[in-house]
Length: 374
Image (cartoon, rainbow, N blue to C red; front, side, top):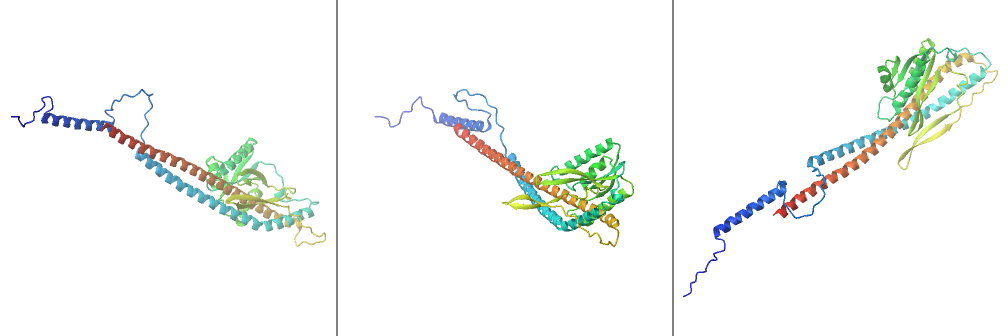
């Protein structure tokens, strides 16, 4: 009789051995997976030798967050610079409107002044404002800005004034200053230059402001405290260029009163861009007085009363031109700042996207390595 009990293979594993082998395999799998994630036990594979590469530094989430914060800050800065550019453009328009409104008075003043000079050209003119004196002391009237963020506007006028100051000191001339604008006043005050008086640069220069400056200048000259007054300002050339200039304000020259003309600059917009239109203004013709005209006062007295008004007009014109140069420089600087902010924002955005891509790629590689280890 055959036995119904199946014979066991003497070479096969017993149930106890099979359970031990399963536990060992499971433990080995866990150790391999942990080694794949931590990099402590790399799996040896028969691969061809590759040239050694520098290990890439992993990009962490903190770096991505920092880049995101920087991009947000740059966008806010760009909004501020764009707003400052528009504000400067609006102020340029107001400044040019003030120049146009004051033009009729300047033309009539030039006509009367030219007529009086023509009437008195054969007479000996004995006016304090026309007397040439030996320059032992010079008063420099410097026009600068109140604030920065306007490119090289303040630096150019300060450099021009410093050069003129050194030239006069080299000639042994005593120099004093009357400053219009905080930047020039602070610069030369820290360097020990005598400051007679300081005026703040107004946002919209008026004839009252010019009268205050001209009164201070005339009092200093007529009292004998200085022998010559020079005016240093910034001549407006275009929206992207301006030139520091110097001219003698007092004493006046009868020939220098007859100006060759003037230019009026108008800020315009075309296809969303700012531009400047130049309008050439011809010299005002001298007013003709009849030979038998009787003046209520002597022509010499009238000329002596009109000369301070002429100086007042010259100061107002130079301050307005300097203000237009400052605003144009601020517009250019803010436009350049906005463009740079846009380019920097694009570069940081690209860098942040690459960092995010590198982080995602690194996570995928870790997952694949763990799967291969299993």
